[in-house]
Image (cartoon, rainbow over the protein chains, first blue to last red):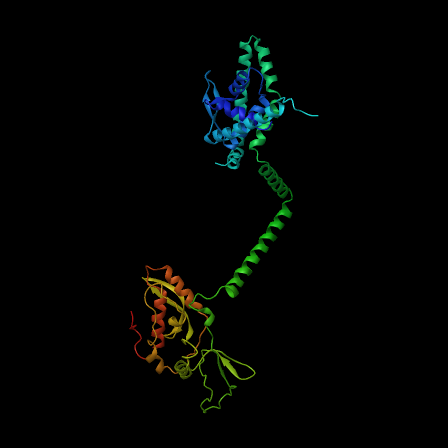
Length: 107
Length: 302
């Protein structure tokens, strides 16, 4: 679904800034390997989010002492996250209602 | 900062962005390889696995680059480069094209500014639409026989007259005619004034000499065209009366376009520090008109 990756990235950045690799790993770990973020779509998404002003990037030292590009969510990104999240919740509710067996289905 | 502006900045700093992207992806690969090593893979294998995971690096970079490469701008710069390359290759054609374009544009601009000054812009005076020029008309001139007084009223050598089918026309008026006109013009004309070119004069303003075009004008001139001085004082109505009385050589009457005076006064306004040329002209006109009246050395409003 469109915007799902953006939503995941923004949510992951909510606790604090992180670099691309850590974002991918965090999503993978939190969802118990159910969701795997491909590198080929992660970085374009990050740059797209940066261009939209939802995340900001800066070069900082990583925990291993190497220079890494850290992304952090901006106030505009927080607003975007809230609106995406409510959209997603509505979608989930709609799907749940649709898929719930009611027993009164069909002829 | 809008998204468009941010992308534009990235595009401008293209090479630096490239280097940053390379470094970022290298960092990612390193992290990935380290993780796989820690999971028990051999050094070489870990590196390969990380690379595989990254996928097609060139394509990835292309995808990212397309975010900050603003396509229309990129294509425009390509087109411009191509255009200049082609121009440089066919130099003779290019030079001729550029010269003819330049001449065409220049000629058009010149013609337009000329027409603008001539037709579109009105005079910088109080009420340009109400200005009229009066022309003196008389019967055909018959040259008087030697010894006989001339019957023709215009005997000034200064003004040019020209023949028409009905008689003789001139832009100069005999002084009695001007005085008579001034007395009876009131219901039709608000002011009536005279101007006559006085040629080029040397005017000294604060010790600096300068050549300027001067005019003889009558006292009502400045009131008539409703000009206010940039500085100093203008010739006032009535200040040339006694002078004119004695000068019966037929100085012409004109209500005309402001010509030199408009220019002189407007440049005078730029020089508020120095004594304005407008005033100098006014003084001078009084001096000259009073030329045969007595010693002209003492201007009345100096």
